[in-house]
Amino acid sequence: MNERNIVGQEVPNVRLGYIENGNVRSISTSEFFSGGKTVAVGVTGAFMPVCTAQHIPEFVKSTYKLKMAGYAKLACIVPNDPFVVHAWSEQIDPDGNLVFLSDGNLELAHQFGVTVKLPSLFVGERPERYMFVSDKGIIRRFHSEPDILTLSCTRAVDALKAA
Image (cartoon, rainbow, N blue to C red; front, side):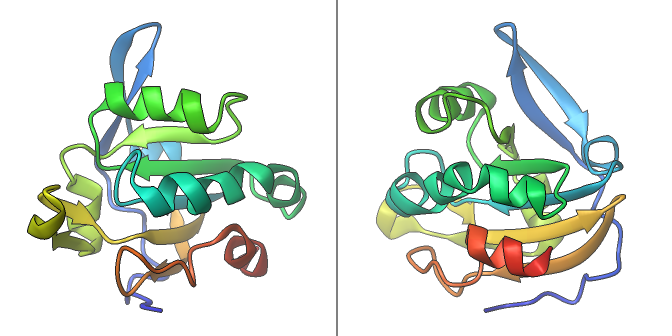
């Protein structure tokens, strides 16, 4: 588990993309995270095996528990373009329990210092798998996995413990 020294700081202000009515829209992280308590998970990519088979399905299945634990928003931040993120979100979370946001330019991942290069997988630069809890825009917890195949500190159960 890697806990960055950013707890107590504001969520970095960057723009993240999403699809609305077939069009690309964006929202600032300052606006998105300004409300109540939010848990956000950053994944290595849409359709990546661990993200698709384990990580995000666990969050989708735990939506009720996470909301009951006090999270107002549940977000998934994905390093792909908004169109791919939208297609993946419809497949993995058809009921729309999570808000899926594109960090396709890796601006948030770079601000957090969690990018890695993965030439052996032919995916270029991607973020490590990470999770943070924010409350009114302030980071209360931040963890990242030691590698992209590990799922040990960014699970829904870890978000429940951090609530």
